[in-house]
Image (tube, rainbow, N blue to C red; front, side, top):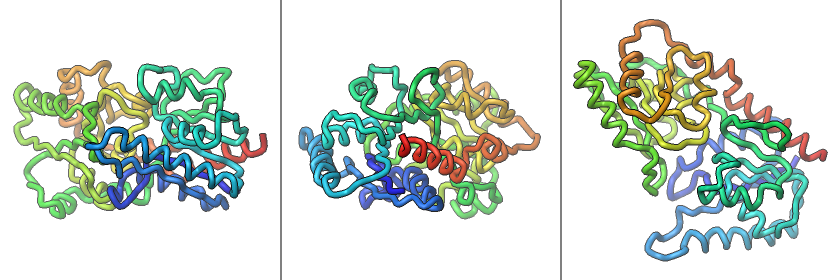
Length: 329
């Protein structure tokens, strides 16, 4: 099976870990005999000082794709974001292709964002749509399929050894904050909310030995070391799709406290040592974080990831089955 993968997130010279989860998921298909061709529209090359610089890059990719499709045939074309779907449609015209798959990070019914408006425009142009968080799927060509976790990389490790590798104070307890891996500032990550929770934990609950640990543009192989050095991962975002860092932390047996974003409700369902707030209030997040910090029992969130079938191989198998179904339609 030949599959054309079109993406706007992929490791590159500008950022070697940008969209690394995308690369891992695509490569996981190779064991099923899938031959992948990746076309990456690299918006990271855009110049913020030049108006419409990123737009020009994506239009250039669409032109490249137009000529590529004239001479190459594929069993499946998979677009991995709203923008990559638009790039395909500019290249291919608004003709509906029966063998196209479209992965969306946003809710298909939310048309208030740029991604949402693209979704509204092109929704009926794709044979299959993949969403990263559960929605009402009845009677629609939508499948819930989050990204998988590399369990070989993300695994429990000795905390003391990890702290030593990072030069951290062994007497302190570290709370992880994962920032954006792109040069573009993502204000929805809400570091200000994280800071407020940290203050409440110290002043109200007496956790004076807490330290923040902010991870940004960390080498892929070092991320598990950072996670295993911490006592908790605190996700304070306003918006997420299927946050990979949450699944990676769970695979490392690192407890997570999160705002109610993306598919976090599904990830935390029946998980006893991860907590989600009912709203975005820092006081409630601090209360839940205190429960984690005072918990002394066993933690095995890695097994929850396995039982939910969220490992890289399980998701890859489901994606391959989806390709087979749509290539035969």
